[in-house]
Image (cartoon, rainbow, N blue to C red; front, side, top):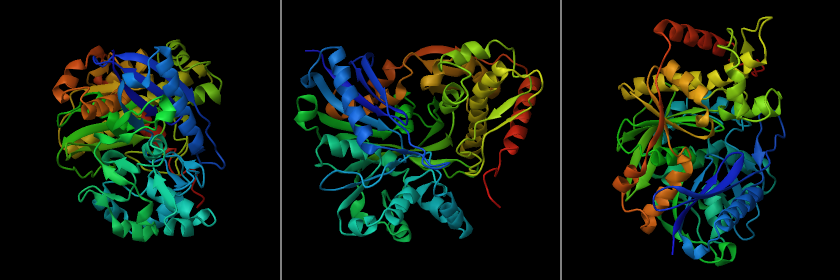
Length: 498
């Protein structure tokens, strides 16, 4: 009987289920978008029940597409949008408030206050993260402080906190398992990446009851089994990792110095730094890549808030394209951007700038600028942001990066990747399977249940699809980067009131 490993890919705008065979090849895919809520400028929310319902429905759909039963699924791995914060009732399973999404900037004033108290270094020393609304801790504090009665209920032990993988595991096991993995825990701004424990001093500062928090576990181990009512039989849940760490694993970046970038809703560069955390002096984050066999591997990360979401903006708000795929065709209608730059700082700027008050700008417009220039400039903005992070990464790690592995939806765009190679001046490599986020979750679960033997077997499954190499001159490259840096400077602090 043919067996499969199942990956739940719980993203920012949609949920997917991908079934992989023993060769690491995709056998079935199902995907469904879910609603985003924007109650105020800079606020982003989701319905946690809808996240759960759509994730379960795509799992059923993926199985039906190839007509298999739950007995043919060896295990489930989960990868998820990170930092998104959910609080729910321990007994009823009902969320007390909408999920607050990683993009949400509602706690910017509070993080400004923490910064003014000179606490940034203190947090960074413990968690590897800078003080920013991006992370879960201040979102959780906001829910505790702002939703009537919630803090009291939390202190009585009635409420649970989790990021999305914790919520899905809890739901799949009907409340029997409340865990998070090392990679997701390291993104909460409450977890000490050196002691590998929730940090009590941080919890006390935010007045967060420790009884709300999940147990922290390896990224590859059997956490429990699904309730048989959901998929027809009990299935082992054997892997979990935040989406970017999962992509690093899926790209088989197992060696120190290996780097990948994922072009998703945001853009995320991660470098494997081995068994020692590397402190960043250039606006990057120190994070946990994964916990495996009781050992932790660390990574440097640069987070770009808006990447693929800028293409969605061209489609949904600007109506300049009908589909994301149109962006490449439209951008090729002009040979360059005509000096136009788009800075998609819609929810602030991430690494290496970290300005929650920055906002989007379009500069360099002339009478001859048309929609094709703006579309091309929007694509190029992703490449420039990746270059900003890569330069910071090389400085922190004190090593030269010789190639970049890429994945995510926008990596299917050949023009984007050619321009990326031109800007970086190194080869950019796209694998045959760009669904490396889901693949990483499948690999982690597969290792736990014996579907895959070891990392060496997994590494042998990785194949390159296309290698892009630079074709522009050093003079052209320098001029482009200087123009971008000038454009970025105009977006700083735009939303700050004083």
